[in-house]
Image (cartoon, rainbow, N blue to C red; front, side):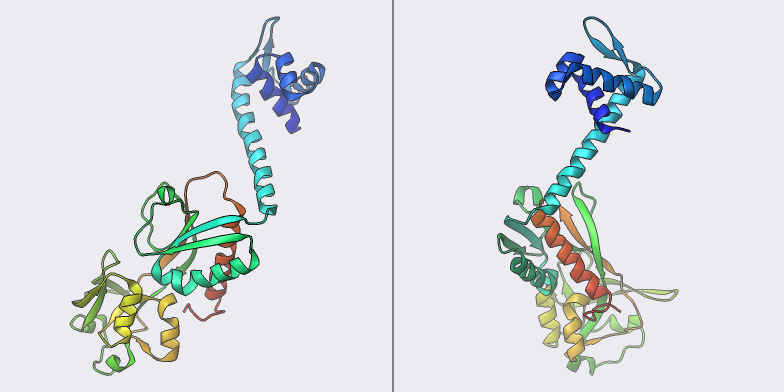
Length: 302
């Protein structure tokens, strides 16, 4: 179906007149009248009631008019998105991310983005508190874990695993064959989490819940890592933060045959119809980096 005919019909309904619709469209009244008549033949029903004073939509015409507006808006949105996709990122890109994932993953993507798009300046805010995107002026936030219900728009771009770990020297002080064996050991609690002491282990059909006893409580994940590395005890940390430590042998993965709950990595946006090129290009690069990690390119998963 010719989209122009939908636009002509919608203009006539909105203006209440073929003459005024033609003036708004910048074409002749005859063209508008002819195209609307062809539209009525296409759909096989009368859409307009024509009188000497005014043009009124029929009941079918009113319903069709509402759908026409949706179709035309979608077409306009698609063209706008194409135009934005072709544009180069400019201005200032403001990103919020958690301390741990921001430092271990986002910073590298920001550096690559800045090198690729030098006309765009980046401001990266790191912190474990949840920032109000609308009032904080942020373009996008990177959040990890489990999202609460929100009016914001979110997209999951990856997953992460959680590992029970401890320093290599500390690992030699105890033996654990079962999750319950960990309950009495020194534990560094991450107070940035909602449940820092209660952990659900699973192995096949076997599930065990263990409540740890905190000897140290810290409210920042990188600091928890530092404490564990210093031999303060056990803790649960995300794979993206400890992969290098495990590979180097500075940390030990305790009970690797047991799994802890996995979490999501999300991009979160303020509510908006369109996202500017600076946001879409950055997220594309972040997604590509995550896919490389998940495919084994950097050895994080597994």
